[in-house]
Length: 199
Image (tube, rainbow, N blue to C red; front, side):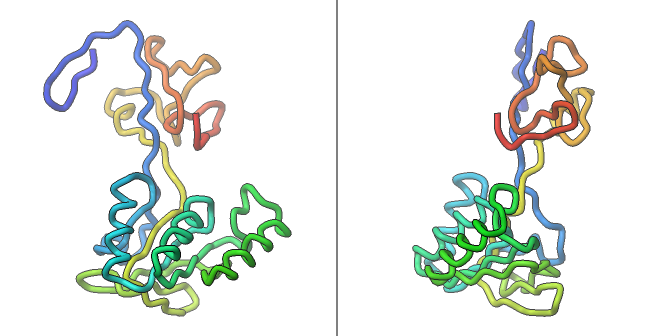
């Protein structure tokens, strides 16, 4: 059976867990301040849109696809945007260094500041975010800080159900968990030690 939060109980013969993923939040000081948002769902987009109405400066942490998409969207809404990326090049999983360099130049032409090889030390502010401090002590003022640094499999349900979890819900070649009647797929699943960001 599956028991829902409201107490509803459903019987099953076979069950598929497809709980997806959760955005990863860097646990630096200040990460819980209002104005620090992830970029994963519609609620996150609404928070970013609201910030464009009251603020002028944004920092996006993460130079992957989602981070760059957030940066472009915030810039189109009139904000001054800086992208902070830990790695030497943008989108390092998808692009080789020459292509990443061309992408960086294109973003800079649009007025977006790119800071590669930059590690976030802390997020500044008391009642809300006011800036971001880097490991090299550089401080970047901002009204919103967007974390787009990756995803983690959503495994709470599987853990609570005593299904084997490593980084994700562990499945075999038939997508079966350690319970022969329960399967998992998508961003929550781990197959042969690999977690994939898509179905």
